[in-house]
Image 1 (cartoon, rainbow, N blue to C red):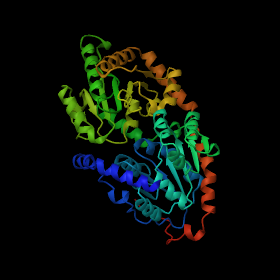
Image 2 (cartoon, one colour):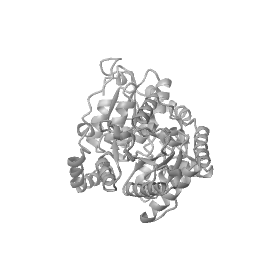
Image 3 (cartoon, one colour):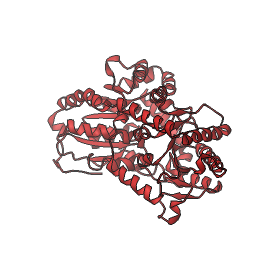
Length: 462
C-alpha cells in the first residue's frame, strides 16, 4: 500500500509541477526550505535531552500551538522541543513566536520514505505531536517503524473531509491506526475519527486549544502603532475583512463602496466606514491592491513607509503575516473570510477574544461546532448562502445595521467573549492526556539513543 501511495504522490507532484514552478517564479512559493523539505535538516544537538516534535501546518495552527507549547515546556522542563511547519507563512510566524522556546524550527519533510527518514534521523524525536488534521501516511509509518509515538492534538475532521476519508476504506483505517492517541476538539470530531477505524480507547476529547490564547504584549504594541499611524480613533468606524479569498475581496470592496455612498447621502450617521483588508495568502497582496485601485479607493499598505495620507485613507491593506490579532481591537465589525468563498471559514476566536462583532458567510464547515455555539448564543452574525452577485448587497446591509446599532454590536461582541471564556481549559486537558505518552516514550527508549550526540544544553538552532 505504501509503495503505491509513494508512486501516486510522485505522479501527483509531477502533474502539478507546472503550477508549482509558476507559483515559485511569481511568488517564491515552495522554493523556501526546499532542502529541509527534502530531508536535509541539520542534525539536532539536543544536549542529551529527549526531543518532542510539534508539527503545525500554517499560521493558524502555529498561533494555536502557543499555549500548548508553553504548557508542555512547563510540564517537561528537561525536554527539548522542535517545531515544524508546512507553509512558508507558517514558518515565518513559528520562527517569531517560538524563537525562544523551540531549539529548532524547520520545514516538514515531503512524504517520501527517504525524505522522512533523513528528517527523523536528524531530529531523533522521542514523541511527535501533530496539530489538527495532519495525517501523512509515510511519515506515520516511519514513526511507527521506529516506535516513536505520534499523537494528533487539537484534532478536527470536518464533515466534508470525513466524507472524503471514508471513501478510502481500509487504507485510511491503516493510516489512522498509526496514531498512538488522537485528542480531538469535539465529540463530533472524535466520532468521525473513530468511524475511520481508530480504536475508541485511543480517542479523547479536549476542546480547542485556540480558546486558550493569552494576551500578547507584542500584539498590544502593534495595536497602538496602527491606531496612531492610521488615526483609528473610532470617529470613523473600521470594518476589518480578515483572511479573505477570491472573490471575497471584490465582494467586500463593493459592500464598502455602497456603505460609503450611503454615508455620503446622510446615512450611517454620515460617518463613512473605513476598511482594513487582510488577504489570507501573501501571494495575493498585489492582486488585492490592484482591485482596490481599480475600485477608486484610496489605499495605504501596511508595509509601505508611513505618510500623512495614512490618516485619511479609505482602505488599509494589511500585507503582513501574523498581525491580524493586533487589528481586531480597532474594529467595529469583523468579517471573517473563507466563508463566502466555500473554503470552510477561518478563525472567529481571535476577534471574539477582543469582543468584536463577527460576521461570517455560510461556509464555515472547518469551524462548524464553534460557529454553531456562537450562533446559538447570538454571538456572531452569519450570512445566508447567496450567489456572489447578491453577496455584496447582503454584506453591506448587515454591516450597515450593525454600525447603526451600538447596543446590538456591543452585545454581540460581549457574548462572543463570554462564550470564549467559558470554553477555556483545553490546553490543560490536552497536556494531561498526552503527558503519559511523552513520559512512556522516553522510558521506552534507551538512554544511549536519546543522548547519542555531544551534549550542548544551550543549543538554540534555527
